[in-house]
Image (tube, helix red, strand yellow):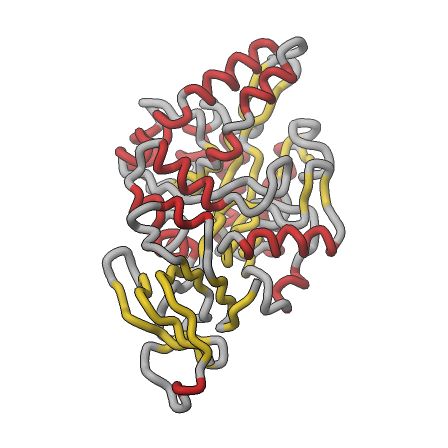
Length: 358
């Protein structure tokens, strides 16, 4: 039994004085034997969400279980207790049996065009096989499928769309028939209209949004996960490819320079925006607080940026927050994170399944 006392942020504007965790579940009713409960104090939030994270993956491809465990523990110590794993070649189902590790919603393995993505990451296929592979990953995942929507085309020397419109329409329709949502990696502009009009549910990165496509996203309710801590690496990527692909390098720099304006324009248009770090490829795990701070820097109000990793993100993923009977997954801070999101970088207590951990 655990008592959390202080200010429990059940919602952006709903604050309780305390909650209890009994047998790993939340209750707001004082339970029998409460006087013997362990007590933690502070400002409590639902366990944070990283909606674009890759447990079981590093820059070279799949990793062993020990490395995946370290990745998950690093995320946990940052307060991330719910992960949408946006593509991984590793089987991480064993994590579900560990009550001390974050909960994961998997999107299966990335699906990419042949030789059009990072080696060892994805199923690399041609358009005629897209529907079959989407169906396969929809069955393997936890309600999500991840496409690679664009990548560098070496013949064009720049980012181009990976999939013809007809095939992507059929693939998304099949995923929806199987009860899965579809998201896609997209850096550039070219693939966005076809993907949205084909019925996609989310776009990762979304640096290629324009005045023409932003209203379309808003009208269709397509969410974005900007991964600004990852977009910060674009100048280094551009420098590395300058000699061989100067057009691509210039494009990447342009996308980087406009990143904050793009995210703010999306938010202002009513596009749902959620927190994701893209940890697990070339980026370290545990960067969720930095991503929230980046959204604020882009011009999203602090409370909305906080919701994008807390209450709103959990609703979007269909997982409970600090609700009666829900798993007691929460993070406790010394100060009010609504007043200053930088508080997220210093959690005081991590509570997972009703136990103080870390």
